[in-house]
Length: 118
Length: 113
Image (cartoon, rainbow over all chains, first blue to last red; front, side):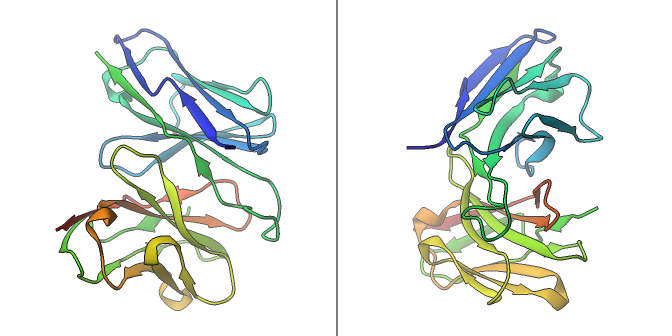
C-alpha cells in the first residue's frame, strides 16, 4: 500500500550526538512536513518542503535541519540533541491541488520516530 | 496567526455515553477543518474533514462534526462511544492559502467498559 514510512521507529541517542531521521513516501506527494510532538502536546510544525522549496518555521531552532534529495525522501537532522528534543517526530505529506483534487489539503502521516536523549 | 483551542484536555466516559469535544479556531478567513485521531501507539489518522458545503460532516466510526462559522467552532460528536474509541483527538485548521496545518492541544478520551 502507498504510505509514509519513517525510520527508525525508535532512536536513542546521547546528549549532543547527531541524529538523522528519515521519511519516505510512495504517494508522490509534492509537499512534505516535519512535526515535533512532545508528550501530551499538539504536533508542532518544524518545517516543510513544497517540492524542493524549503520553508522553515520562525521558531524552529537552528539545531534542526532538513534535506529532501528527491520527491520520495526527506530527512530530519538534529545536529546536537538536547534533553528537550526528546519527542515523537512526525513526517506527513500531501498532494498539491485545489479542493477538487482528491485528497487535497489532507495530510497523510507516518507512524513517527520516537527520539530519546540520554 | 491561526490558532486552535480544544477545551477538554481529558475526558472519561462510560461505554454508550455520548461524546462532544469542543474545538474553536481563531482564523477569520476561509478555512479547512479536520479532526485527527491517534490511538495508543499508532500514528495520526484522519477522522473527518470540512472543506465547504453542508456544515455537518460525517466521518469514520460513527463520528460527526458540525462547523458553525459564527462561533468559529468545529465540535466533534458521537452518539454512543465504545471502548475502542479510547484515543487522543486533535482538531486542526488550515487557511485555504494552505501552507501548514495547525493543531489544537488535543483531548485524551478514555472510555471505560
